[in-house]
Image (cartoon, rainbow, N blue to C red; front, top):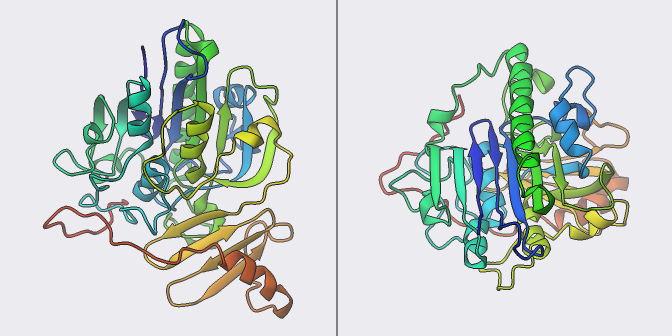
Length: 364
């Protein structure tokens, strides 16, 4: 029985699979994560500057989620949130320090899949626990891992300040996606494999006078995301509901029919209903956070940010999609702020950090 979780530097792909004759209710899974791919990058998200034919090919076979937030606006927190299903106020990692790691008791989605017969492997960038830490992938459900354990080692592939290099990296990622899809199509597993493509966070390339990530505006927290399930009747459709990487853990738990109790309280919600009907009403908001006390909540129209010092920002995406006009002081919008603020984290646990670690982000 085949199960594999594949991580690639600049890309992350999670693959879980079974033999061709295995129970189709427990399909194979491939995650493809494109590191720091902003939502405006791939052409399936509407880009006019760059064509990504292989990503478009994948998107045509699945549902394209147009309003997705990462669990955190930088690499390690986003991966931690996705793998554990916990928002960064309750998970172990909020920064990109090579000293940070997830705790031994935090159960990843890989650890939930393994008892169900899944074999799990990763290749490329891990970044949420070194080889000698409690967060090493081999200690959290991975049968094999090859690549960057350390967040710092993986951040020198492309110079982040050059738009040409950024666009080139997207084209290269698209080519790699094509290689994965070609191999899958040529295999006997094509009709029993879920494929998910997403990014861990976006990037400011001059917008708001920033050349960085690590912010709660949509430019860095909103990401491209699509999911393809064999036989889905909604292939090629768009979904505007506000969803989150935190929703992947419970979604896989449902659509893979994992017949065991989830080992920890999850912050997300299964988006399986949206895969069947992308246009249906969606009652949930999407949450992202950065460091202690800084968080943002998005619904179908508004994006609300509250910082640790109490400062607030509110943006109307219908009128101001680039978030230049802060409406937080508008009296008529106080009910909107109150409603969205109710979904902010109420507590923050300490980060997981190996003994003697000095912290500090490894973002350059």
